[in-house]
Length: 429
Ligand SMILES: [Zn+2]
Image (cartoon, rainbow, N blue to C red; front, top):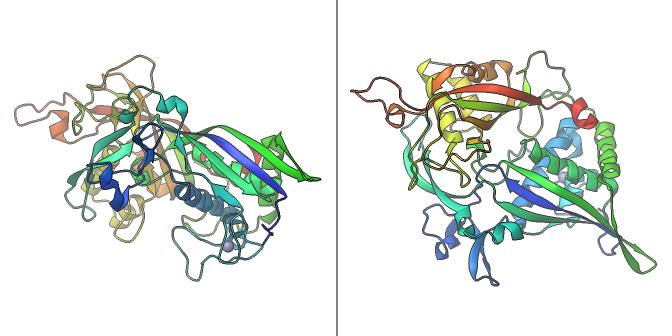
């Protein structure tokens, strides 16, 4: 392990996290002092203003940064990094080896961490908005006690889309290579391959990292100098590292790597890790009752929740008596995580549409992540694209015994673009 006894340099990486979809980092047992929600988010007390505010604990951010780095490194070479977070493989624990870049940067039993991550707090712009308390909201969440079971409604608190946090990462006694790897990891959020907090498979925690800056503090002859560094040199150093270790192409479908990152796709939706940008067009008006809203919103405006779209897809596949193994692989089962991540669909236009309902002809943005899925699994989902579908149950759609038409909630999903993880492209862009 590199020595941390003596200061030689520090890279400071700063920027702003902008939430594209609501985020949920659970508040746990101590949240009762500031929230009445049965499922509150974590908040901290700001002594200056005397109020509680949502924030992102440094430990939460550190965890996801580490696992994202490990996923990238393991895509190129399994042996260069242990698995510390998520699905631990047998015998895979923090190794503490000098050759393990994640232990070197994030720490292990054998050495301290070179990386320190501060808590991320609301940006000043966000905080000075008049009704910042509006940045927290409760949404209905239908959870099934067992897969395929009847959903039970429980309210769940989340931080609204559009909320911004300031992050600050210190990397002590680091190298350009390590700083560059950190920049690559942050870029993964912008591609929506990494998400913040819980509930990401139903669309929580999509975010982008904006205005990222890199500053290097160096010690020379007892004087500390402070220079803005071009991220370009660091990114090149990090990519050289990844290209240099490349030795384990295309093995299993585990979530600790990008599957088939080294094969050339034949189809748009081919085996591998794919993030699709989708446009949802409302054929009719859309609305779905929220907890105390006429229709569910994400804090910025009305949305079609990711969980609703996912529920629709699962329900349809079950109706068509699709192989249970495929359904479990896509949506998750008792002992496995699902591979499909569906964001909310939100109105992206400039014209105000109010908070009552989404008017017909509105175009909404949505992302779907096909996490290491086979082409066959993806086809089970993409078969519903470019067709008119009724996305909610009949009650929300306004259909009853006396009204068999379909006055509401009919949409069409269309593919705008597709981004499949390719090692070659990753090193080039
Ligand atoms: Zn390790």
